[in-house]
Image: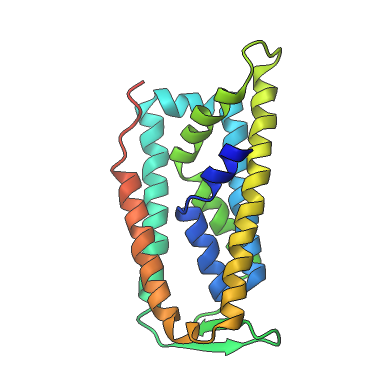
Length: 213
């Protein structure tokens, strides 16, 4: 659990997506994004337990197929954020003094869409699948009777810790947006920075080599 907490605190595409959604759509959007990310992690845990993770680790073709899908998706998110900054944001405030940024001519995405985008951000990253395949088995006892189910339980424990941390990221970003109206002026810069980082994450993923063995 301690190792899982430390690893989940490391910022990456998932954390960046949660923070961006929380700043733009409020705490509910941030929490829904956290749930979508966690749902994606459960897919990786199940896939690794079934051997799909091992396939990604040994098959360059399978790894590259998922890699290019994930890289294209991350770059797509980044480009959309960069394109949104070209429009003048109109920022409103709700009854709880939370920032409700809106772009003229663009509707705020629904919570279902936020969940699906968060889910896709995680599922289409083969590095997450390889992470579970490399990390979790280190904590499986050598004499366990059912390694597959032990893997699943440890993966679920890791995801539970991760969900709590992701929700904390969402709450922290929402708390900041509710108490710092200067973010209204900085929202466009935040989107531009997030867009550049997503494009960078996508390019980094695209340049990742498949495992040698």
